[in-house]
Length: 367
Image (tube, rainbow, N blue to C red):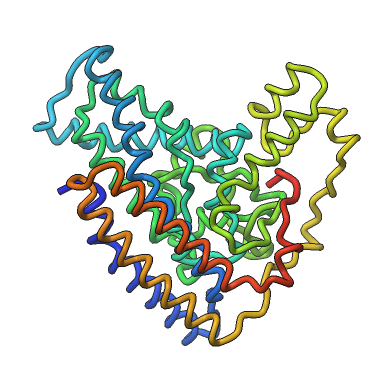
């Protein structure tokens, strides 16, 4: 069974968990869902999986190239210690990729998609980038170098990804000793917050130990509730624009910079860094958490039902594409992926009235 087929089988479980979390939130009087935001997050998840049909080819090709020609040894896939070690090593590499995704602008341009939701719930977990394949594979090459078999690598990568689903919730409080060792809902809420004390903290995927070792851990403080989103809000339900927003800002800043070194630094410095001449010529407002307002345009009942129905159609289409991807020609896969992107764009257009589009234009690339 392919990894894509595993995702298809897991999809009903994800959606049932989301429904359960919604029901619990309503029963507790602490509902954390808005229909348009949840549909936007889920649409970005569908788009990510559709583009991964092609992006996975890049990641697999690069891993196999190093494994086949540069590996130091070849570890045995029959040893349980190899599997356990590979999972720990993968999680360690993920920590540094995740940290890099917050500290290097070009990596943030991909990762920002996951943080754009101003709600925090299980639908946020499925809000994934469509461009992570461009550079993310670099961080996992050490596993190929030490001889982790591709089957083991692919499996532990899937385990690490699936684990992180459940930590995206506000319905689970602190968990005592578990919070000290593992990425938990409390620890990951901190990661998604834009508060000064929380921003750029708690990068761990399965283990939070990496953050404690490398100085990036901060505990959630009930006296300072987390404020979710990014410091340069997307203010749009357009899933295509969600993936392009920060890339566009980086291209503009790089183009406008006078010095060639600054044109390069725009991509490699932390998000929000801008050359002096660009910052002076094209100033952007400083972030003030007291002025944060959630993007929440009105959504009619008819538009909501229409968008939800189209999303169900998108899920069915994605499931068919992923389940049969290994049997389809590249032309058919490209056509199927393109149709899904168009459908997801339509869902975003339906949930965002035209009057709000002007207010959803790009802002600063600062988180």
